[in-house]
Length: 234
Image (cartoon, rainbow, N blue to C red; front, top):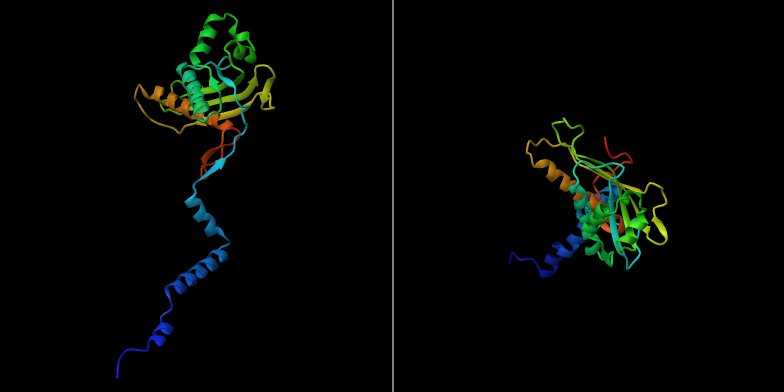
């Protein structure tokens, strides 16, 4: 006699590996269905932590664009932040091919210095004087590194209203008179370093610049990041 079973019996007693896979999938599918599809959504969010957001406004093609950063209404205490903000927006416009050309920030400064009545000029007029056909007007509403000058903790805030102006046709976007508000806020930081203020200002300008430029092109956002309210500053 032999201890071996006939081959046919062995095949019957040992289900194929494929059968195990199918069985496992069915069990998993039933479990997910019974969980009200919450599990599949959770898995998808783990696999795809970001989502693509379309442009809020599509810029017309083939334009020379001036980014006009203005703090006439709310002067900033640290002027270099305006250059950083402008250059960050210009960089994205060029990288994303959203502009045929951009007007360098230095040209805006030169015109502001040379023209005694600069602050009386219309946005479209400033654009024409600098050879732009389209202006992204960035009206700074708030820039602060601390809640009060004597505050020991840093708490960066940067906010601006944005609108797009064609130098011939006038305002293109948005319909709201004040423009589209864009804001950035940083958490509270305790740092005694004398250089931290400049570092924080640079970070705020870079982030706000990217967020403003993001209005004009599709981009990825963190789907887990809380949505900002209409009053972003505490």
